[in-house]
Image (cartoon, rainbow over all chains, first blue to last red; front, side):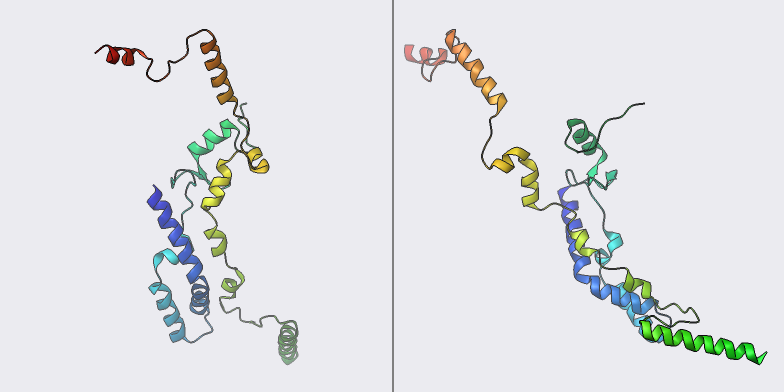
Length: 99
Length: 110
């Protein structure tokens, strides 16, 4: 599971490095008042950037186990790690409830 | 009806002037200019900080109090273990020293 996390870290770094360029290209391609050729070129430039540089390709994974599903974003943990730590009292403010 | 047209033109002029003065975008037809993308802000720096660094991980692993004091604290489990050993030795039931156990005695006979 470690490799998936490493891949995700790499993708996050790619997002940062390409962010300015991508924002400008996105702006140019969405601006309908510009020349169609300019917009077309911006769109092509966008599609040429690697997929991992897109923020939507980022996946929040569990910081303890690397699991990709069932993550509580507030604690960055998967549901099982969350349960273990909550029962152990490691997560401040989290209490087991019953009603 | 020409009066209405003049009024509209004047309104447009005023809007253009005010947008120029206050630095707003003058876009009476509502054409899509993609300005919302420039308004969104950058979130990559925040994304990079998702996984804790090695230093952060070590900080989490250390008990909170020892992090503050800077040296090791009393380990209750270790104290219990040592006390139990002391009790065994007082009764003569402690583990033998090296070279005094059963196996060492067999080897000496040979």
